[in-house]
Image 1 (cartoon, helix red, strand yellow):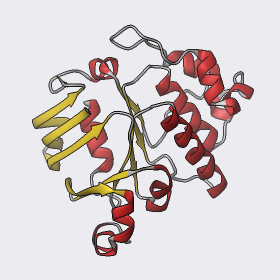
Image 2 (tube, helix red, strand yellow; image 1 turned 45 degrees about the vertical axis):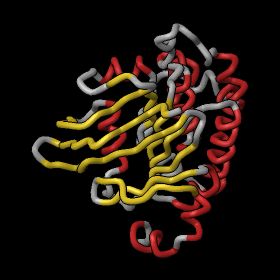
Image 3 (spheres, helix red, strand yellow; image 1 turned 90 degrees about the vertical axis):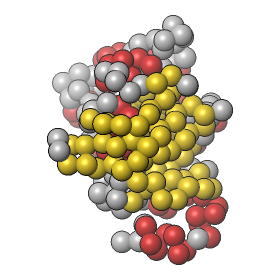
Image 4 (cartoon, one colour; image 1 turned 30 degrees about the vertical axis):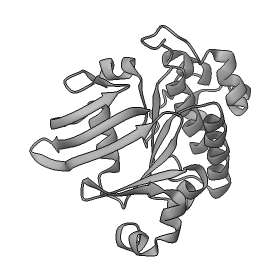
Length: 235
């Protein structure tokens, strides 16, 4: 069943168009990678879905409900969980306070992510619960940003460049975390340049180039398709 359906959206930063009839379809309980070079439109796609940038035409549906025209706040309440690439933790608040700031029930008034489940899923954060977020490492802040978003009980998690700027050993921890989230049924769309990272965590991929979807299929298919990788992903 389709959870998130984006169809032929055209999005703009002021008068500059950045997405051109961009479409994607995300099923429930899937980990899907949105791949593309720097500037291809990955982050713009996320910002269009969340309502941060203007979408002039097209359709964005979550669980069959149209989101076009809804506010950023309304889309978040509907179940869009967004983890931006710059993490945006509250540096003067503790880890636990950051998570509490993200708390909200979903529209069905269900809380699947109480504090105990957060600590069980993120044991590292439990040990740091009273530390100021501004004192955390980049990897710890990344985990905190994901945990805070999950505390809002999203239907889908949009992860923007989760491996960017992190040491390889920390990237491995993020991989383990995503694998754990997949096992408990979290639906995740990951925007990444790091194809090797996505090969480990995702089962399917969508490639975006110049603001539009140009390829979709399984990670196994992409791994065998050197021509497509060289055309759209090679630096």
